Length: 204
Image (cartoon, rainbow, N blue to C red; front, top):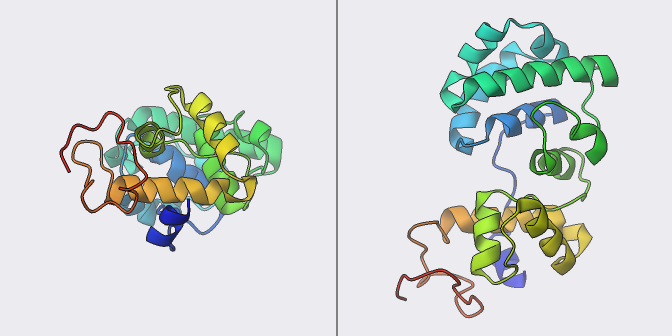
């Protein structure tokens, strides 16, 4: 962890948001989409939709067009609309700050809930396991598990709870900037001396 912390002292969530609702929406949109693309879409989206009620009342076809370029837009639009309705009906329009309540919302699993809890509320409920974290956890020999929830449990056992959110950021930044899926930069890697390079065939 010390090497990651030194390499990425400013690691943070790269989705743009100013409140828990915006982060929830952005994280739902980020499924199978880059943060850069999501940020382009939400720059306009967040000016149009400012409350959970806005998502709840908008006609689905209109919302689909507003988020079309994030991919899988029909499913995402249904999730956002359903999520907005649930927030209005169950939580007075506010994003809840518990894992149980968040994962009962449309389109919200543990990963999305962990992103919102850790970044919007500064609550360390778990470790965000996205594709980067899952890949690096195996390459670094931190776990042999393939299931995201089992990977999360393994990482939670290795890292102090106070650092669960930040540990996710470190791995995600490392996965994007150095340890990419197809061509990891092992020669320039800050973890080179520690990494067993499991599954990596690229010569150093």
